[in-house]
Length: 397
Image (cartoon, rainbow, N blue to C red; front, top):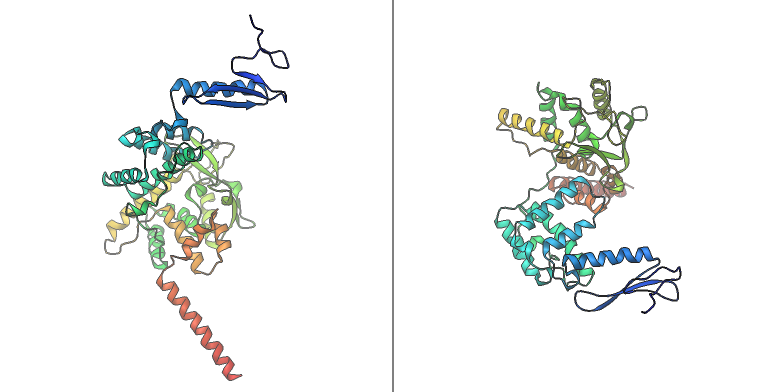
């Protein structure tokens, strides 16, 4: 009977295991394609953990290395390595997986899918009633999932590496900023309406700071520095569909910032804090308490509360003033309006990027490229006026 092989510590090695002269452990095995493979580890426990993963893949029958898994299995694999996702991101990924599970496309093997197949599927989903924004969400998950397979040499090309607008028309509504007149009409209506005037101060804070709605909902008393007139924004409040509240960091690292209180914002925040219901016990969410916005049940408001307030108010406005239409108003329209107002006022792009909490300056720059004909014409006239004035001065001299 042959003697069992052992490592330098006297531990018995299993079939396929060995230890090199440099004390590095290795495990040799035959993969599901019949090729010999070797994995390495610095200690025996790490090696055997890797062996378990390999064996699990073989037992599951997932021939990932040969590209024989389905689109659904690829998505599950991709989502399985995504950790620390935000709640809304998890919801979006679950949506894409649910769509794939209802489609024949989801059961095709990934190595058989060409670019034209992915494009045809996008067209089919659009014809089935999926909006452009939904298609963009689906493609936004599919592309990195297939990119993972491409990076690991499982497929030759990423079939989702194409522009969505090349195959499907973008029918989503363009983001519209309210004009000065529209802002005055809307805010005037809210201020004077007996039902919705109680939301006026909330709307002022959103419109005049450009905060994300979840950031405003996350504000606590300690985030407001009335003495120095500053608002600290470094977290946001979220509530899952099941009703669980939690606090998460701002959408981007650049989202952590201080915002100045204008006189209008200062007064509205003072009003909110002054009229806030006094509670015997404050609700604690992930170490935060004292949220300044409360609903009728004395629980912290979340984005859905504000969105509903605007939707209900807009419904009433339309019924009262059918001949004075306004654009569809949402919290994000307020944010876009603030950004546009600051751009129109001449605030430089770097400072505007800071105020908005944009990680990518390109997002901020998009506002500058969509400020419209009126602003461009006005600035052009101003430049010409200054040039003529300068020439007149030179002639006098």
